[in-house]
Length: 329
Image 1 (cartoon, rainbow, N blue to C red):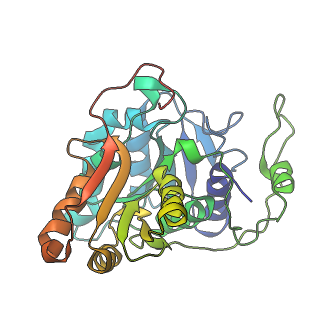
Image 2: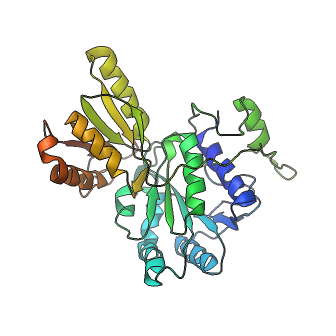
């Protein structure tokens, strides 16, 4: 089974070969490193940029205007704050042109805690991202969805912000990507660059196939009738574990919803589950003030007030800059 990093790499390779991806670029994205998390190793269209996030986003917009289909990377989402104005402009362009000009760019960036990066490499960007009109926002929780969401993002005529939960990048999936070899060691030998001299190395790509996860469609990963748990990205596996433990210890069965897309989000599935259970918990790691979860809570209360049995709750990160080198970060 592929890791999430390998799954994204396979998706980008498929995009190069079959979906018209013209450029994959960013800081250390090209050879010899292939990305700080090895997500772009071996890609034929990958190239390196200076340490300049504004240049990266501006270049992506220019390539898209010229008819290309770029995928760029902001090395860590902490540095997406350097380009908020450009992201706003990119999100406006298709609407401002009345649909005459597409903006098919994918901006990929690792997000969240999990590598002890403290205040410089551990921030979340999901709530900020959902405040950017014109953008679609996705965050996978497993390798198969990472593959399918990347293909969907590449094909979309709108700009897509592809958030990678860095704590899950080395976690293997439970489902095979179509065309992926069964043996994870075989896959590693095929597509993972060796340590040391890579002068003569080239990947042996497996014949992966098209598999698309539609943007805007969530997945019900556990079914129950007593509570609804909504999450995405890093905390989705934790929510599954907690729901399974509740079932085992207390006999409580919960719906667990993997949003996958933060915007547009699958309100139909959320609404159905809330009507069924009457109890809601939303979980993410972003800071708690003006968190994306608060928007979902507001809408749930507005549209399902009389369906709720108890007040809905959100479990979020504390509103602090960071906690030194705390293991959580």
